[in-house]
View 1 (tube, rainbow, N blue to C red):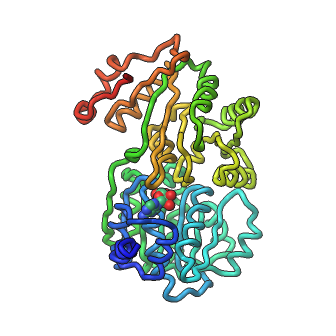
View 2 (cartoon, rainbow, N blue to C red):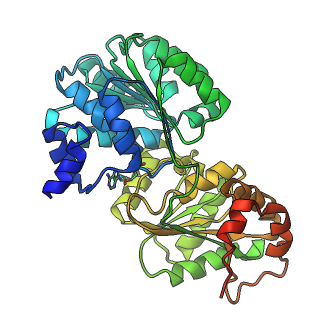
View 3 (tube, rainbow, N blue to C red):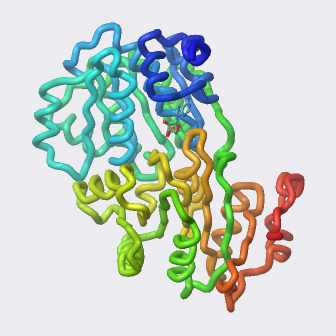
Length: 406
Ligand code: AMP
């Protein structure tokens, strides 16, 4: 254990924080932590490109906590984390509370979908770190419920997602309410031009940290199961029976199919909950909590849950529907194999899904292994791998070769 302490301590983290990290059970820093923590501790701005599941939350939270813990004040926030979704906001708040436990850092979270009143009271009470979604934070800012003039460290998490969701102007307004002297850390899974511009506008001479491409982590085994569209429910039930343990996260594209699929599974005695944007926040919280605790085995979710959700114990991710945006595929499958774990990501592929599948394979620069499930061979087949690979295969995919079913 002495060596573990040494590894995190080498990054410049305070012994008390190293103890907390040890307590959480981390043995060695991840790549993004090794790269980013010393730079953040040195006070530099950071432009970080890292996929989820790489440990980026700790990469920005640990040094922020260290910086703020010298003088915990619990008045106006000195650390501000802005992140696109409610679930991520809650998750980051938990991380700040955990990593800041040695130094009594007080973190609160504000996000849409809940009543303003209780948040307003919490804000009036004060905190060291505020974690927020952009829309709700702007709301509080306009009402004068929060003062951002003491912010020393500003973290923009999942910046590409905030851009996609149309939060760009909200984010800019929020940033304007913070002092120019702040330290800014911007993290994004991808680096489209919009994010680069934002970084250029908001940061001072940022150090770039780039961890890997936008690719699923190595521990994830990916499979495509060709199947007729009408038999996807049946195949999912069969697979759930084949997987003896571990939790399963199933993705549908939209809300109604998520509810319907959860009903179908429930009717077949599967312990299941659903999570989508049409649910009230308290229902979403409850569904997540039960899944997180392992009370429900299967969670059927839309992309709301795809980004950043960090739940240990998810052994299988199922793309019941193939995502329209190939980047969502990467985020969805990244929900398994968190940290050091391994996991499976299977995609149920009907003939009509192959255009989206090809887009995903182009992004991955490789073909995903096809595996027919006996008894579920489709009557309407997607184009054969050979036909597809003529168009899809790229030099890197050729080098890696295409794994086939034995
Ligand atoms: P993130 O990319 O921040 O969503 O983190 C992904 C997962 O990795 C979370 O479950 C973290 O608890 C875990 N994690 C973060 N840092 C480490 C580390 N140094 N060693 C092992 N697991 C870690």
